Each structure stands twice: as structure tokens, then as C-alpha cells.
Figure 1 (cartoon, rainbow, N blue to C red):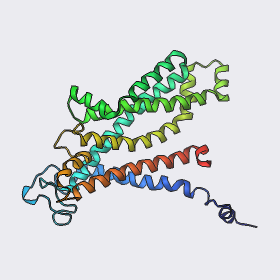
Figure 2 (figure 1 turned 60 degrees about the vertical axis):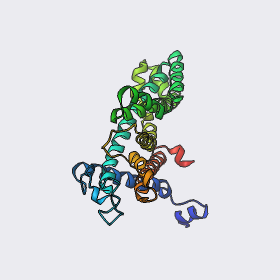
Figure 3 (figure 1 turned 90 degrees about the vertical axis):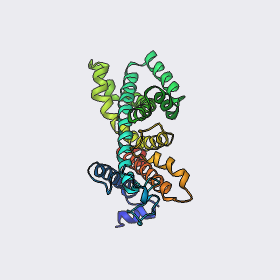
Figure 4 (figure 1 turned 120 degrees about the vertical axis):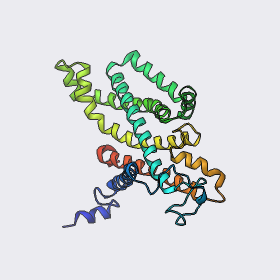
Length: 287
């Protein structure tokens, strides 16, 4: 009797579940470490991240602290840890707000259809025409730079993203037999949306949210780089990159370290989203 593993190897496929869950495990480990660092920064950092020590400015890694100091003598490790909390909290808040509002709009449009669906799509087109950087510049002119401005700018951009995804998946759910049966016994559209449509598309929303978190972190870094994120002296990865531009020749680690942190966070959330998609969506997994 031929073992199952031998059949899988002879057909050119890896054993069931191994390759599918590799991204999930790797992404979960990276995201888990980032969240642990962010939470740890709330109670402990090697030095206060905003403390300036001019006498120790531009010290290389291991010369003063684990990762050196910046142009003001601030500990880079402490700033990266605090910046991890600021970046993650803004990204998660923005995706949560945008995902909730967008999902409600998409599910509602699939249930109502008609002019409401057409109006929602036109609003999404208008929002897509304004990138989050431009939205943040307009909000910054009205409200001033800060955490709320960054969250609002990213959330506004996330609403149409989730609305379109939710609308497409909801329309597929409305064509299923179980929805037809629910309509036949007299259930209202609201009841069908809450009891039958939403539970069957929640996995797609979760997967899309995990992937969009990587984009949100990248967007937040861009806003902070332009001075539209959190106001100084609160450390963020994007502002650390912006401040390091003048000192690239003297202290390249000031740009390399926050750049690696941003890349690692985006990679982690993308791998987590891909792994969740393979785990929760059997059609994508089989493909």
C-alpha cells in the first residue's frame, strides 16, 4: 500500500496543510512579536523615548544603548518600541473604523440594491479619487496634525475598500439556496442579512482586514514622514525616517532601523492575511 505522503510527493504536491499554514504561522509570529513590543513599550522602555542627551548624540549601535542614539541623543531602541505602539494603534483603529462602516454599507447595499447600491458605488469612486495622503492634508489643514487626523484619513480610505469587498461577497451569498429558503418562509431582508449573509462572509472580512492592516501601517508611516501624523515629540516610524534623511552619511542606522520595522510589520500582516485566506476560504486554498 503506497503511503499518502509518497502519493503527494509523486504528484508534485506537498503534504496537506503544510504549505498552506506556513504563511499563517509566520505572519502570526511576526504580528504577535510586534504587538508584544507595542504593549511592552507602554510600561517599559530602556530609556524614556523623548529624553534628549545631546552629549550622546549620533552614537552607533552598542556604543550607547543597543541600537544607538539619534541626532538629539534619544535612544533609538526606545523610540522604535514607542513608535511600534503608535503605528499599530493608529493602523488598527483606522482599519476597525473603516472596516465596520464599509462592511455595514456593503451588506446594506446588497440587501437593498437599486439606487442605493449605485449611489454607494459612486461615493466609493469619489473617495478612491482622493488618496489618503491628500485626505490627510485636507484634514490637517482643518484639524491640525495628530493621531485623530491620521486615523480619520486612513479610515475614510478604508470605507470604500471594505464596502466593495463586502458588497461583492454579500451578493454571492444572496444567490445561495439558504437565502432563497429564508426569503420563502417570510424573513425580512434585515433578518436575512444578520442571520444568514453576514455570518457567511465574516471570514472574508477578517482576511481582508488583516491584509489592509499592512497597507494602513505603510500609509501611517507616509503621513508621519510628511508631518501629518502624530505631533512631535511622540515617536513614529515615519517621522524617524524623515528625521534621518539629513544624517544618512553619518548615521545610516537611523534610517535603516525604522525602515526595517515598517517592512517587517507590512510583511507580517500580509503573510497573516494570506494564511487566514487559505485557512478560511477553501476555494482559494484548493486553487
